[in-house]
Image (tube, rainbow, N blue to C red):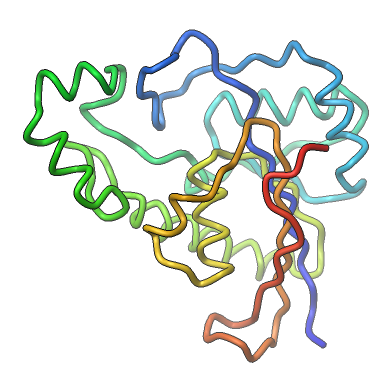
Length: 208
């Protein structure tokens, strides 16, 4: 059996004040006031892990809140490639307003939301590519370790799609809730796929 690297993905805490508004990779803060949720995560996550986050405030703040709830995090590694999908010119706007104001581009986007990008933004398929780069790098650099990755719904869907070898379209159907835990393991030297190892999924969208 090869070296097993264990990934513990946590989606950031809820973002408030942006209901119905697209924030994508905007650097917005999150609500970390529900200490009981962070205490539960601190108990569920492994001690002595490598911590990584995206560079966005909501991921950094969530990691800090887990640490303050009882699980030391040291200095998490910030990995920009783990940020949320960028929606370009549509960020800061409401989906309903976009449909009314720019119906043609809006409708075209939803014809293939996994591969189409908002004006000035990126597609979910693009997000999968950059997430894959980051995951592959960390699998090599931190092989055999526990990796706690505090990131975003889109990023975690992308990581699962890569592990399960499913299409971007199918990955968009995976639910990832705020402060949920998703566990996957990379086994180096596996022979089930051509990506330098194989993957095992232990749990998705778990509530600690």
